[in-house]
Figure 1 (spheres, rainbow, N blue to C red):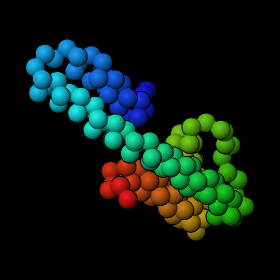
Figure 2 (figure 1 turned 180 degrees about the horizontal axis):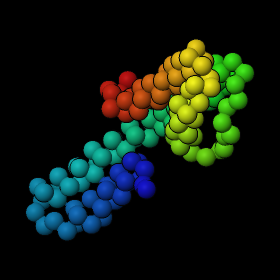
Figure 3 (figure 1 turned 60 degrees about the vertical axis):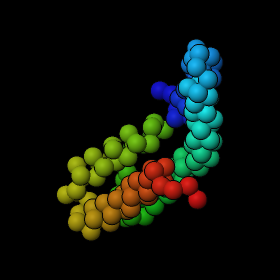
Length: 133
């Protein structure tokens, strides 16, 4: 799947190299070129928001670092270096499957810590929709 930045670059190239040159009338031709310019500004903003991936990775790393203490010596499920979202899903499934074995206090603490991390991830995703600072 193309990233948002790559997709914008493809649209910009199409506007400049295919669409605008194919338009004979001056005003629509100028508008096609202007659309490419506007999309370049948007592409720069998308490029600047790559910090979100780093912040999301830090939130997940903090969760994995905190879990051993939160689980109070309970063994975490076997982890792998797979995709973080899939790994989080497996963790949540494991937590609910082991709810009785973990006990209410450990389960609640782990559940709250996971929810906190998921909230941080959601906050990072929502930064994309928010105003540029």
